[in-house]
Amino acid sequence: MYFFPFSSASNRIIGAKDHASIQINVAEVDKATGRVNGQFKAYAICGAIRRMGESDDSILRLAKNDGIVSKNF
Image (cartoon, rainbow, N blue to C red; front, side, top):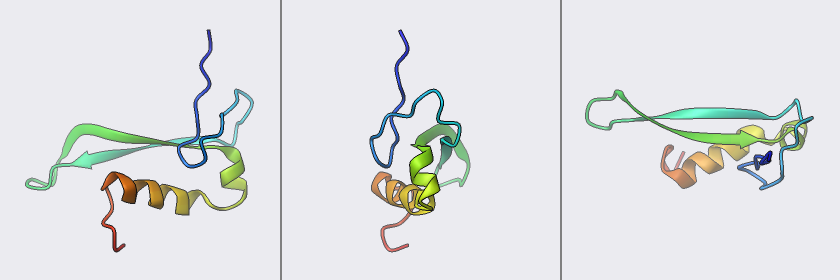
């Protein structure tokens, strides 16, 4: 059985034929040492969000919610 992935920004289903969709893995960094600790957050953006030009804003909003980027950025 095939499970469709969902867009992190819009909760839309990313279909198999959506060749404009992307997935970005953002590494988590240890605050004390500044090194990558092996963990990451995955963000999937569907092609419709990218066509509207909203992918950068969506990724920034998701990163703020996850605490990767400071709230006042």
